[in-house]
Image 1 (tube, rainbow, N blue to C red):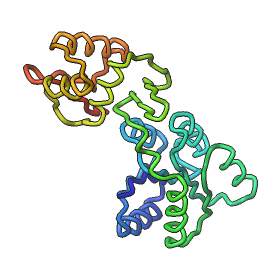
Image 2 (tube, one colour):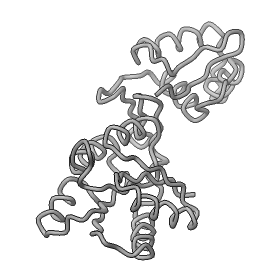
Image 3 (cartoon, rainbow, N blue to C red):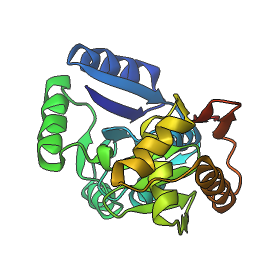
Length: 223
């Protein structure tokens, strides 16, 4: 299923696009403000973004730059009434992959989305996030908001395992087996405790990383 975020403050347009695409097996999340969009993106990276230019709390070109600075390969389509050549050029210069001018036919928009996804694949699979913590798997990089965090190999693999199981409580035994033992590195519970502490310190004690007493740990969104 294609997971799509649509930044649009007109409920009629947003509703029509959402209804049509959901019939095509898309999951569509509507964001009526740029602030809501940023919050949604910090929590979860979708497959693709549709972006209006004129929003109640700002312009979509700023959000486009913000997205591109964090998720270089995330597909973005402008969907806007601004159809002057200067606006279209500006949209591409700010990081858009495609530009669709309103009014538009829903079947044409659907075709443009599918064409873009054929070219880009599911770029979202390389990005994992929880609250303000982001992982770029292709670069093997970790960020807290806009700051890149230097993690050891064990800290990175631990965070990756928790990210891939976000929302689930994973036992200490399972973590030890999957993060260390699978590579033939047999360690004890104290190693996990120390690694968790160092990871929390480097990530500035994130509230999304929770200890489940006598069981293990859980990473979950809190915003």
